[in-house]
Length: 459
Length: 145
Image (cartoon, rainbow over all chains, first blue to last red; front, side, top):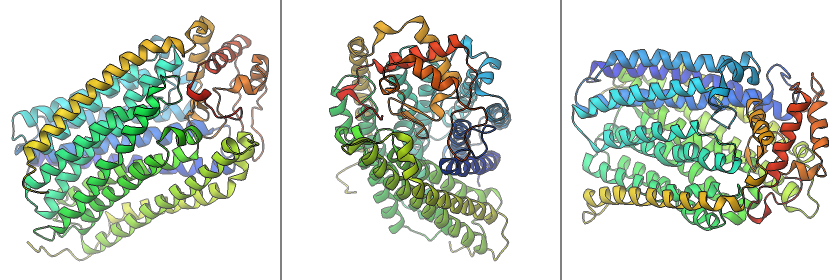
């Protein structure tokens, strides 16, 4: 760690991991509710558990992105953070706002929360992933602006590299597109159309810029490969992400009452969306193969390769599986979507944040890399979580294929709940895989505390 | 990558491609918004329907159900529930109204939201309006959603 203010990232990462645990606990709760419908009913109905599960994911990834930026930007800009104080204050504000919102979901009925937070003044609640009370949304905007100001000023007054500029672009895009969450017209088609300007343009747009720049940064650090080479890859990857992903938004417009031409545009462009992820995989393996040194942090290298591969599988391959309009006609809104969502989020965004944490956490704790025992445990946790997620994805895909056949495709379509009963075996096995994931997560956390032989510095 | 393909070229593809396709997206969005009156059933978007949408939102219905295929996959699709329930808003209202407070043993159950008769009417009208949206190929594929 070259600059003292990089250490602020530690706060953000600890919060991120703690919220990650919460997310998975609610995940396995929901998994159980899929097969034991009355579990925790009516205290924590499924919709509340799901809201907590998805909102915690979003919040902890945002903590992860912010922490990553606070670690990366000073080093790339070759100066201390513009205002470490602002970064600390915003951390506590964001944490408090996040915790209060989650408690609100859990402690009072959602309709009551809407009343308490005066949703009527500017109704924005109750849309998938954007369930936060309007006041929380305003808080998110304020935190994001303060954060971007802080990062932006650091870059402006320091060295401008491709990595920190691409990261900044991604973060500004994240903040700008979030503003669409305040637009909630009574017309459902318009509502849905612009809802995707937050959701799609985040995860299949600007977040890819963030992911690619974080990955590029870690790869420079752990391989020692020439920055010029890495920056060229970075540009071409994010170019493909935008070229495919912007019009690729159309794959969400097939069945919501938008014009028919979206079926062509959405199918063609989203069929190209795997390309940037495939290039990311090529990029990561190429660069690691050309490495000029063997970094003692083996775990970080593994996470970096892992995120590239899993993002390609989850976002690229599993996305492509159901993105063509004639296929999506049958699969839209089934467990196929859930399968894709799980692996894509894990592979692309969870793993890239864990890559950054894996690389930077030892440095912030005054080591080059975690000790040998700790790294062994971390690597085990990598495989446990990743293989569990593969299992979850395959099981949900199996459930989805059966669901599509029984409910949508066969000559005698069955009602939704009848079909759900027939999928119970898949859901039970998914729950087992979910618990395995949770055990991997505990192993991951334990790796930070494991004592062992310090790594040899081979440089 | 080969030396003939320079970083400058990669950067230009990024900026050029990004800006170009963003402008295309804006253009298509303007066109889409202009065409929506033909499909989005706005002629039936009454005050009651708008109230119903608000109720749909503040009770987090999307946390279990899908609506036009978007939402959670825990409970049935509701964009065609009006059709599925025999085009009867009364049937929709009765279903919501008589959910058991403590659920059904061992099974998924919709919570009891304690809505007034007026609110039930608004919600049912909202679902009726959604059923009237003209989706491509008349999605969902069949009445089961």
